[in-house]
Image 1 (cartoon, rainbow, N blue to C red):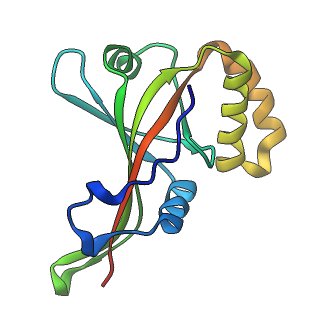
Image 2 (image 1 turned 90 degrees about the vertical axis):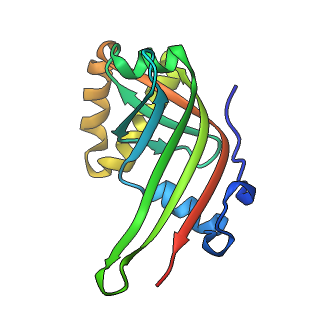
Length: 164
């Protein structure tokens, strides 16, 4: 199953801070990294900053090592939260911060299909190293046995901002 772009602002408490859907898409598309938050196997939470790519629709891809805490957490409980923070500006004189953020609720699935893994790595390279795409694709192919891909199937997206 792939995700859907379920833009749903009904979950945002501060109605005066809603970020519109177009700006939410921009933040998610251009974000440098996101915070993937999961339920830890041993109890509690576990959050880790990750590089990611959004496919423009219902899926976010994250790459990682083929074993480790992140994968154990996702196998234990695939329901995750993913947050991307866009522009920020600390305003000391006003004791506040201007910001924009997007919060994604998703189901994390480890990708088993080699074709989908290649597509995900290509999207990641196009985002982070577009000028090095050809070399990057060669490197990605060599690292496939040492790389896992997580597909975050988007369930709901909400977005907030504070303008000053």
